[in-house]
Structures are given as C-alpha cells and as structure tokens.
Image (cartoon, rainbow, N blue to C red; front, side, top):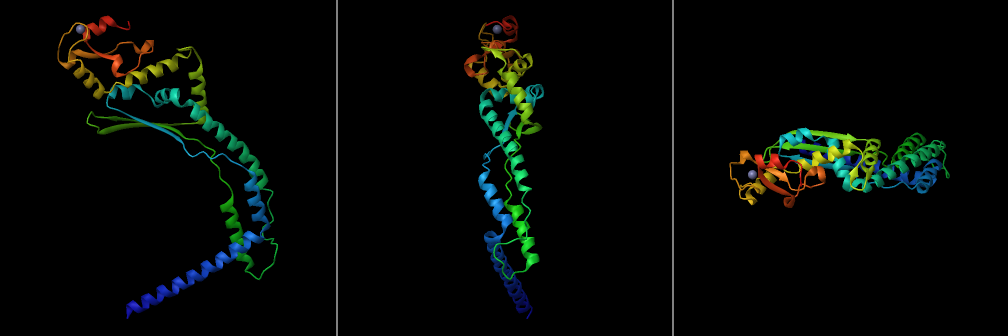
Length: 271
Ligand SMILES: [Zn+2]
C-alpha cells in the first residue's frame, strides 16, 4: 500500500515539475523575443570583444634536498622560469589589461540599460513572474571576462624516496611579475645588472642538482675524484660544476663532475 502512495507522490511532483519547466521555457522564449532590456544587453555583448585567456600560470617543483628547498624562494623559482616564459606571460598580462579597460566601458554601457518590464508585444502572462525571470536572465547573460591572472609557484620538499613533507607557495600579482621581468631584462649581453636577479638565478641553477642526480654522477664517475682519482666514501665526494654557475655554467650532466673535497676546495670558482 505504502509503495503506491509513494509512487503517486513521485508522479505528482514530477508532473508539477514538468509543467513548471514548460511554463518557464515559454516565458524565456517570450522574453528573448520581446524584452527591450535583454535585447539591448545581447547587442552590447556582441559589440564587446573580450580576449579569451584560458590559463593561469602555475609552476611547481619538488626538491629532494632540504638545503636547496630552504634556500630557494618561490620568487627565485619564478625569476628562473621567467627566462623561458616571460613572453607568454607578458602577452597574457597585456590581454588582462585590455580586458580590464574594456570591461569598465562595458559596465558603463550596462548601467544605461534600465527598461526592465517593457516588452514589444503584450501577451497575457504573469507580470510579476515575468519581471523576476527577466532580471534573472539579464544577470546570467552579463559578460564576465577574465580580469585577474594568477601566477602561482608551489615548491615541495621530499625525501629521496619521494615522500613530501614540506611545502611553500606564493601567488604573484601581474604588477609584481612585470617588475621581475623588467629587472630580468636589465642586462648587457649575458651580464645581469641587477645583482638580486643574478643571485636568484644562481640559487635555482645550483638547486637543480638533486640528490638523485648527485648519486647518478658519482656512479658515472666510478665514485672517484676526477682530478686526483681518490676513491673515498661518498662523504668526501662532492659535485663540481666544470664551468662554474657564477660564470654561467648549468646544472647539466655534462657540466658536472665528481671531485674529492680537497680538489674541489682548490678548484674554487676557476674554470
Ligand atoms: Zn681529488
């Protein structure tokens, strides 16, 4: 018996719902054809061509070396990445600024539309419901172009087995990123005039030698110093940049070698 009452209720509720939906779509059709306010809005939307910016900028890196993780800030990491991504980010910032300016004009035009409740053809419809639906539709169709760009850096620290136990993150404003790009561009040939920028680039470059990479290089070099041939336990071996980072050397396999602590100390920053 209970099941029939339940099914009856379901039937009644779904019928009411269908009737409501049919009525709503009839009202929406009427509004799209007859509402002055809505038609002005749609025309306005056609006239304003906002730039479609699909992506925010997000970059992440995991350090398996706690010293590097502590020494390298999110800003350092961003500066390093800007070497490769600045044109892409500059273009996105340009588009954002374009959208912001255009949006101000759009809102200005939007506030001029005030003739709600005025329709081309009068039809026998529920006026109160019509007005409520008109305002709802209007709100839905107002454009909302992207006007904020998130540039986010997330750095993790992990054990050598990959277990992550620390994290830091920072979101940069477009103004902050523009300033960094300006500082990065301030250079003569390969020489950066801004010492802070150069220091940041060096910190990140040094940090690219992960512990995993370090042990791969020890193995490649047979756990021996490439200068004196001394073979000691890993505690006395160090990774040396053949061309030093301070002179533009990179943390790549062919620019890295195994040295014992003594030879590394003697070599210093020479090349
Ligand atoms: Zn040595």
